[in-house]
Amino acid sequence: QVQLVESGGGLVQPGGSLRLSCAASGSIFSINAMGWYRQAPGKQRELVAAITSGGSTRYADSVKGRFTISRDNAKNTVYLQMNSLKPEDTAVYYCNAGIQMLNMRYNDYWGQGTQVTISS
Image (cartoon, rainbow, N blue to C red):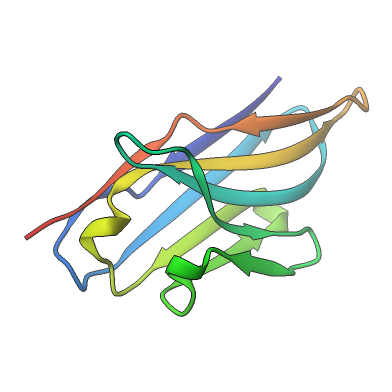
């Protein structure tokens, strides 16, 4: 089996920064794209940022220039550096990864979510 474990959420003031991490572990053969999604109360889950195995990235318009996604393939870990945080960034942030397991089966996996709250 495969697990995605997130860390780094918390409460920060507007204008502050946070760094989220998500580590994949288990019977992993390879990891394709990895990404971060978020879901605010009463809203649908939305893509925040994604990164391919080759390092190509894409971002939601609302976070461009403020957030940076990166990954360490050796550690099976994806990061989200969030700067200039705004109250509207408040949400539960979820890690996502497309993973091929050692038995060659391919599945989409989600982390448990980490709360990010931006408030003064």
